[in-house]
Amino acid sequence: GNSVTQMEGPVTLSEEAFLTINCTYTATGYPSLFWYVQYPGEGLQLLLKATKADDKGSNKGFEATYRKETTSFHLEKGSVQVSDSAVYFCALSEDRGYSTLTFGKGTMLLVSP
Amino acid sequence: SQTIHQWPATLVQPVGSPLSLECTVEGTSNPNLYWYRQAAGRGLQLLFYSVGIGQISSEVPQNLSASRPQDRQFILSSKKLLLSDSGFYLCAWSIVGDEQYFGPGTRLTVT
Image (cartoon, rainbow over all chains, first blue to last red; front, top):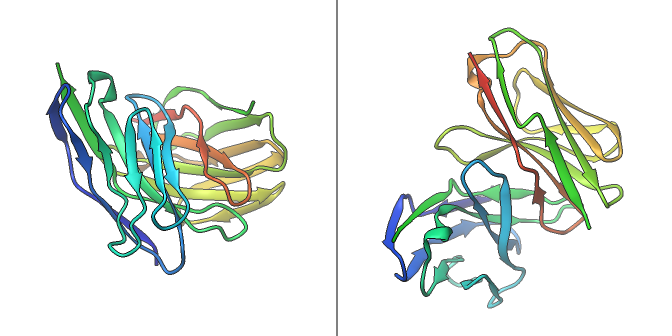
């Protein structure tokens, strides 16, 4: 079956540091890949997505590239802010006529001033 | 634009009591609807999904049930809550082949 593996957190960084959160996946077909973000006490928000190999998703300074050869979709940001503190979820979807999302366990990011 | 509502936002219920959580979507027709649970320190677990009125599929056997009485309404229920039912419940919607959009969630504490 499908699965998503994320690096365990928490990841603690100082403001303006470079961020990488690793994500690898296992899938039988050709999934779409997503990063969702969850701020404290809130639901999940879609951060970015990529639908095919070598696509790069980007939003709010975050980027991730769909790497089929390494089955990875690592999240990066060049300079984090305190407001980026949240839990980040990597997910994959295979369309079967309905959207099915398989999530990683989430990585908490804590950014200090 | 589309919006998704969940209520209540927080709920504290004793063990053995019933449960009803509601989710409604505005601004779209015939969405796929989903219920997830997020336990403390853990990822998201898909509980139920629905591709149409009255069509419910269960992913995990448990004492919870779901219903879809209207196109854009999705209800999560239980007849008798267990301590293990505590968690953060998220409703989501999608259009066929697209990503999912999540509601604000309901924090349930079973005491």
